[in-house]
Image (cartoon, rainbow, N blue to C red; front, side):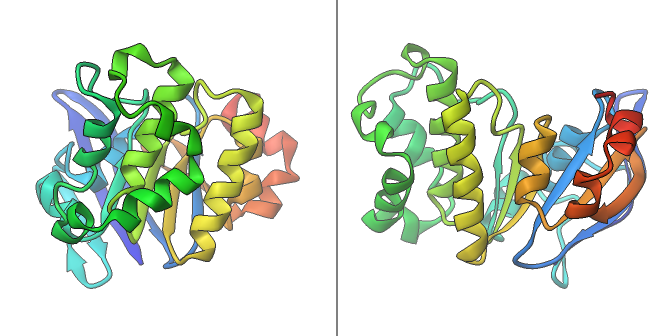
Amino acid sequence: MLTLDNVWASYGPVQVLRGLSFHVPEGKVIALLGGNGSGKSTTLKTIMGAVKASSGSIKLGDDEICGLDPRDVLKKGVSLVPQGRRIFAPLTVADNLRLGSVTSKRARNDRSHYDSVFARFPEITGWLRRRGDALSVGQQQLVAFGRGLISEPKFLLLDEPSAGLAPVLVERLGEIIGDLKKSGTTILLVEQNVHLALSVADFGYILRDGKIAMAEPAEKLFGNKELIRHYLGG
């Protein structure tokens, strides 16, 4: 289980997270929703250690991870697929994928980790020698997703994974998230596609002004269009 308790975080003088508290049970898919500027991406970056919390607690099971460097968070089995693809443009696709295994000696030496990613994204096998900047937006997103899965994380943070994907790939993405859940991967999903997020999630939190404004089972949120319009603007 991942637990955030009274977490505050900022970018310089701009306070973004304001006493954020919620939990993600093991083996579940949890959707974190909210309008632009609500603090969704900052929440994932703070969990990952890329943004340092000024106060509060972030625990993975019994381990306090608040304040750890991203590399140390990775070693504990947490992986982030960041917003905007964020692959390394000058590197080949193969090299981008290898970066997903840098913290795991087993993953670096075990071909099965790569085979598992190729099984989910067979297109990637044809791009291995291509540079990252030679790929389309949607192709880069698939590579970023694959890189996040190479180390077979126990806890996966997904930041807008459907961005730039064609509708047929968005549907596949939902199936892949469902498969990952069945395999025991715990997922915290930030996603502007509310339909996708709530169709795959067990529970949803709506974030507003850096704190939780609403917490409901995904099925209940899915059916409350007035609530979605009020908090998400559409």
